[in-house]
Image (cartoon, rainbow, N blue to C red; front, top):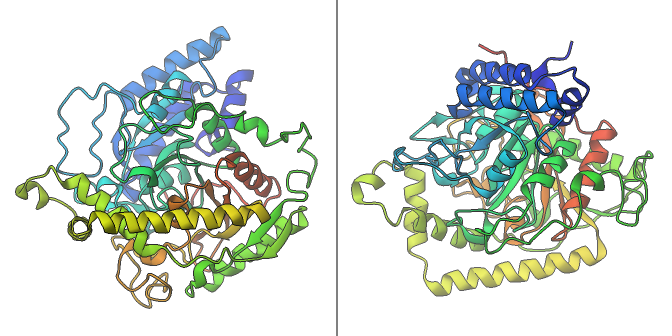
Length: 493
């Protein structure tokens, strides 16, 4: 019998509508799972059982009256501890943030979820200020992989990915400034979307500027589309928000813009022009198991009707420009801190902040030039191809507690590609951060496991504003059985 914690948000809502499921039972089960998995993977900085049960009881009463509150009434959700959640401290993974204060405001995406009746289970772990691609911090310790706790969950939204993978709520809000929803999604075997920049409003504004996106982390693409219909609503606090979405992302999974019904097998992908780049920018360190799993999925795209060609976008790895923008943003984050507070920071964060503080305005503008040129290149590339498909990452999860894999150890890609060799998290994430520079929508879809049973992700990238196309393609992979939404196998303590 399927456990309540194994069900997607879509399936939960079906049960609420027909009366076979109750938000009270679902939230109780989700809270038990949160408490059960926390000692194993350390996905949470805060669990809110009393508030969650109160919200669940209110939801159950609304469903009893036949008056659900919005699109997600009674669905358990978690929030990365970078985003404001009313009534709970947002510590951002740092010992330098005081938990005192009113904490009386929701971030825009959180506010939209609340308006639609979602039930908040708690807040998930993040590295300090979300600065790196793995999740550990002096405040909360190491977050571990739900498939093997000796490995990392990835980051910076690692707590959210581990929670979703283990059934501790089917939906989570993450942030992505260089791959931070896609990296842990790939390592933890879930789905995640980095939307087009500005599609999901963000407040307070990120110190990392227009690199930072907010996105859904879910069991499958359908749940992410449903979540996007909620969190993409406008919010006046974000001056860079794009405004209302052009249409429903959930409806776009089964109906094209011209009204074509996409529910027939193969119709969702028929005629799509897909570029497959197994090693973008000439990166040489893709693990064989990753390459094989992604190639199998790409073959299925072709069998499902897409026109697939092996084609590389032809850009040079923009890692130095990304470092300039990212590290200077990190330096800005800690600028108000005194000497004693800086001593409390993650040592790696102190290092990149020192580097970032050394950049000049001209260095920053030169990085912006690289960014604009990359955006132009990708814009022209998508004149020819609807989608770009790559591995999400060149490797599977490596040892927990490290920023980068040990040379020759799990992952084995350190030092083997452009931008590698410095031990920074960007040395093993060459396929994610370029699309933060370009602000394009990009998703990670689980497409298999390696010989150790660790998940492998495939990345789908589209032109700016083509978020619905990314979701539709990912949904087709789930429908065809290429991608799966199972619960991670870690035994609960």
